[in-house]
Length: 200
Image 1 (cartoon, one colour):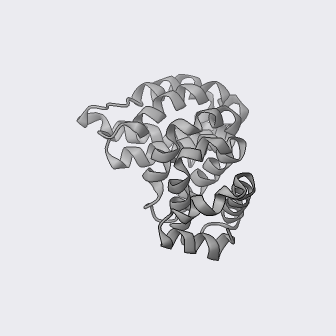
Image 2 (cartoon, rainbow, N blue to C red):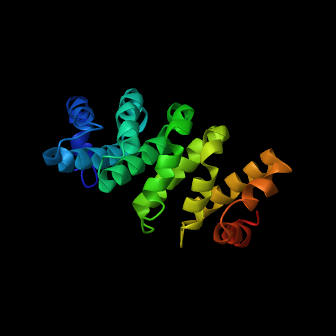
Image 3 (cartoon, one colour):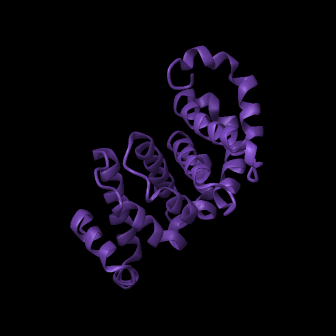
């Protein structure tokens, strides 16, 4: 419904969203994993369409989604859905999510770097890039994982590819002489793709 007939759903969101938040347990029972997965995925679709009225739900959702992402006992599918939704919430409410970036950046990149290119992944990564643009220090400890996730893309959209390039160039300028030493410690395959694609 969030995808196909959002305007029919909109009037009922004040009742629906608290239930969605309640479904997002960082330690779901086995029989509840599908419901938790659906809640995580659907609220990302809602966030993309809801607009400014979604603001009150951003932090309650981040407070539920980040622990799911950080919990190694959660199924991989739930990590992926939590990461996509965090990215999508970041796409529309970056200012609210960006201060929390350091706490989940590495796990976020790890959850999505192996996923095939698709529109959902693209919107999630554009949201993540918006967070990095507002809080570049938030990926300082996870920079290798970010670069690994970037170079794993085969065909990013033009907008996403430009965001990757702008972020990498900006981080290179911020790092100054330390850039070469930092990137020089990366696996050779990552170094080569960063040079080839983004000239960094």
